[in-house]
Amino acid sequence: MKIESRSSMQWKHKIRWATCATFMVGVAACSGNAWALPTFARQTGWSCATCHTSYPQLTPMGRMFKLLGYTSNNVQRQQKLEAKFGKSTALLLMRVSQFSIFFQASYANVAGGQAAFNGAGVSNPPGNQNDIQFPQQVSLFYAGEITPHIGAFLHLTYSGRGGFGMDDSDIRWAHPWNLGPDQLLITGVEVNNTPTEPDIYNTVPDWYAPFSSSKYSAIRQIPTTFIEGAHGAGYPLAGIGTYEAYIFGQDKANWLYFEADGYTNADGIGVQANSGGAFGYANDGRMQGVAPYVRLAYQRDWGNWNWEVGTYGMWSRLYDSPNTKGGPVDSFDDFDLDSQLQWLDTTDNSNVTLHADWIHEDQGFGAFGGPTSNLSSTATGHLNSLNINGSYWYHDHYGVSGGYLDTWGSANPDLWGTSYSHNGSPDTNGEWIEASYLPWWNTRFSLRYTMFNQFRGLTNSTATSFGASAYNTLELLTWISF
View 1 (cartoon, rainbow, N blue to C red):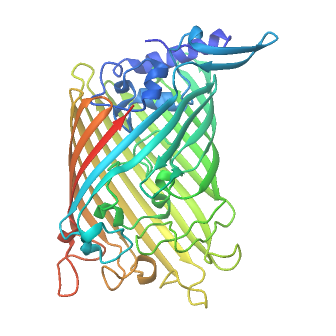
View 2: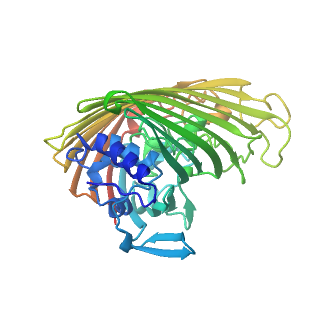
View 3: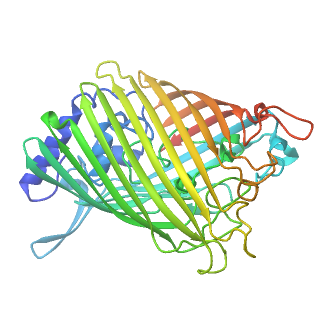
């Protein structure tokens, strides 16, 4: 398998080939049940399993492909539309399609029925029963190489609300620099609309498990930190940043990844108390200035194993009032520690991946106690989110995954609402397990069960409230890509 660079500079071709060859050993023939964007498979000529254990989880080869700006390809020159200006190539477009479609459908059954949400911002199906989403989501992607150094992952989604919206997306410029026989530096500049979307690890909110859920699932009602609420680009953010990956040591077994971005918004963002999300529709407070985001991670490869440990942080300021860019300011400071361990079987097409992610958020509410205070019952607060999960994939077709979710923090009736516990507690924890089957690499069927020990402060049922078990959720999920 060969990665061809269309640059006339022969040394760049050698860098890409040497880099990818390093990681093809132990990856190309492994990586269990995997499916991903058909666009990338058409561009590279690789199996989806080369870059994914199972979408969206990346192998080292998949991380390298993303770092290089989605530009690696095996497309021959005659398969491209070329336009010259003098002796220069002004345009070079691939004739293969760079469009893909994802279709998702789901069924959710909540133990207590949708009535358990008690009008807490959930769109109840007719008759207040559990329901089917068909479709749950339809996504259109334009993804892959634009020029030899520029690539894109553009994601447009229909979510069943009567229209399309921009989902998590990025456009990036990337360049590899050969610093020696065992040293490679990749630098990049990217624009994106979702904090953590540019990341190459599955320990960040935009890419961690569980990867999809019905809008009728109780998982959607777990309170989130500010940075978690931004995942999936459900709200209008815009960011620009840079990243660097320094890959060094014998067999290039050490990776050091750094990313820095700044985010702001053109439209409104705010806090939706009912759902517990960090963004919402009721309060459209605008961001004050630019919210910085910084990421640092280290990866070590040995044999069939690779291990990552990292941290990231985001510091955000929002005007409390939805109608002005002045007045009191609310603050959300997020700090994270995360780690990932991955085993890729080079002979049996099986793999194991374990993830752990902890986020701590400090909150400040500038309008507390004033005449416009309607967002928070306290002047300050905090929220913690712990996500531990793992997956095992066997022979390219069968997968089992599961995890533990725990959210805890300050009680705040105005912020988190009182539809569940009267004191507005965000405290929620539980376990989930999922079985998946892929008859083909572009088709996936999953059955997931989520069991709650505590749900937004509730444990046992009372005369006036449901218990945590009322929110246990069974989901049947289908993903098809083409």
